Image (cartoon, rainbow, N blue to C red; front, side, top):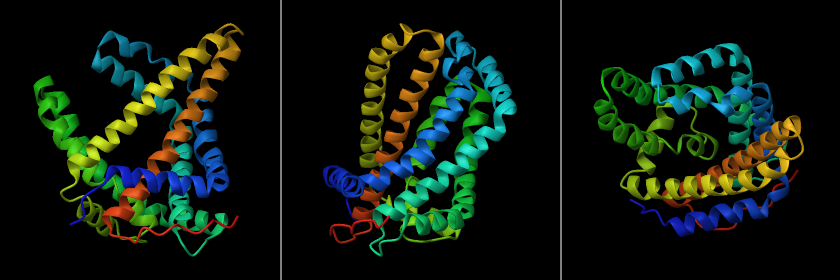
Length: 265
């Protein structure tokens, strides 16, 4: 069983992005930046989260459910677009047959049902125990969360299994991710955590600096400017994260570390 080398996986990810940055920028802009920006502008209440500060979990959940009930259609469209875009992005970054953007998007759309069912199974496996624990007691949440995190890590290679291995059977997708991540859960957890922390720090610093500038220009400019910055950082994180998943998949699958071909637009 392959052991994860975080440095090698990161180098592969940056190489994949660097060699295909033009196409990556287009896909990231259309499928990640724009949907995220639209959600931010349509649902400004989600960014503010005023109830979260009170510590009232029940009230916060009620607020979020009300928000999703009002804007479910926007969340659904954004989620579908980002899922198809991610599958297409992984195809473009890793397929040495040099697919066009249109071909990659077609494959992403055709494999979306497999992605949806596989993720639905994972959500049930993780969310149901967490929900039951939240109802039971705060102590139960602390007991269940490590299991939920472990399962999330073991199933973190679902998208590469679909886009790169071209497995369309949802159970086969879950099995492939489970197999690849075997004996690498701790390394993957550290890798993902470092990436997440770095993104949070960058987001906080950029938002703090630009937030002051936007605030001086008026409420409307501040709202739009913060939404643009947030969406741009979010899109960048998504691209880097899934390029990292491609690098992790390549390494754990034992693929030869040859350079990927340039993408044909």
